Image (cartoon, rainbow, N blue to C red; front, side):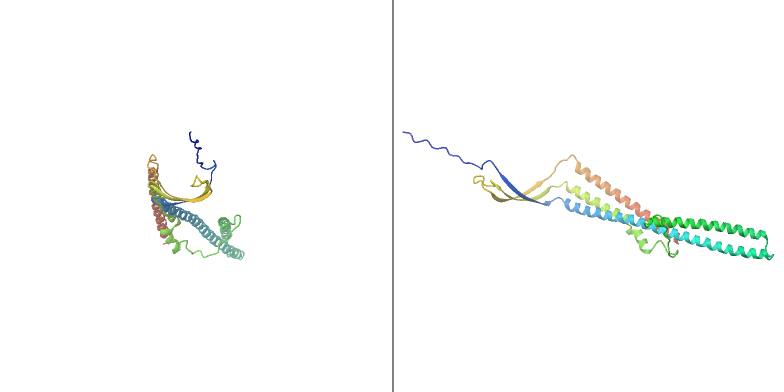
Length: 276
């Protein structure tokens, strides 16, 4: 008699559904100096922006100072014209008195009258020029449509010791170009770092079903750690071209900085010569 047939045996893995909640983190271990170069390039760009703002501010300050002294000079010319007009007016009255007393001629009175007329015209022109200068000064300092009259000593110099020093080596234009050069240099390092391998440390925490034990098919938590290596070996020369382009850009910025520095030296020498 044959033994009874053995019953079929099977092992079930899960119930056809799965759930997984994952929290992961990645920490770069090596980028060939790219991350540090990117950070320093960002700092240099920020410094360049600040210097460019200072350049614009200094340019506006220069315009205000020039307009201030131009208005001050125009006011001095107008004062001189008014004083000349007053003197000629008194002189004309003296001539008229002498004419009445028979001590002057009509020709002399006519000559003085003509001079007085020219002086009055000069006063009107000087006052109009002063008003125009004051309107321009008002526009520059934020009072458009109003006259801002300067009050100071005309002997004050436009070039102080601090400004001369900044014109030599601390001008915002030079600081901006220097910061831009540093930013380009750091960008070159960043681009060169992309030629090297990148190593990341990755870690993750999981909670789900069935987890790592498919037989029990229960919710569980577990962690994973991985070391990730990535290295782009070929990209049709794209990264090398970027490095070369950035180096050429750095040379152009350096040349522009030298040109600005030479121009500032020339302007400073000319200003000192004119003030001598």
